[in-house]
Length: 164
Image (tube, rainbow, N blue to C red; front, side, top):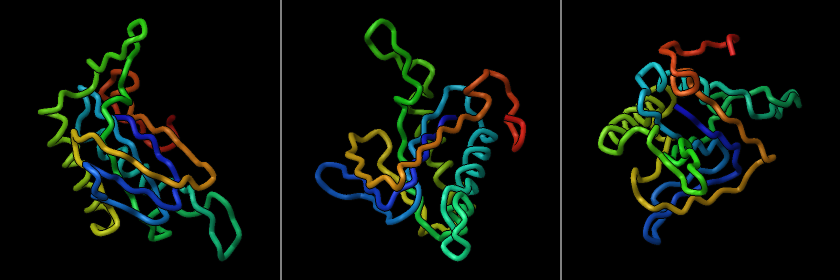
């Protein structure tokens, strides 16, 4: 599984001219699901995203001190199969992305995992498979990419803290 995490002042998703989700300060997370991803990959991505210390502590002035959970900020998840695009010549090929009929329930379970691990109301998402307009105001900008090891290396082990 691949996640591109952006620290934002605000972000929203629009589908067919209508805003379907929006957050204030927090994290916009673009999520790519690999064909071999398992629940262990989802657990890893959820835990890492919610605990990444990407926010400053206004009380101490310390940068990179607080997670999105500690800051009580929002999380906006957006499914993006193109994160597993491979160029064949000049044309993208998405064969390593999980097929949509399998990816949709898997992605929905990831969203639910985020909601159970944090605060349900703080976690928003886009519309799976829809053509979306994603609007964001970057904060920094700060952008991090996370890969679970299955989609990275083809092994079945999930990389734990301190091993990567």
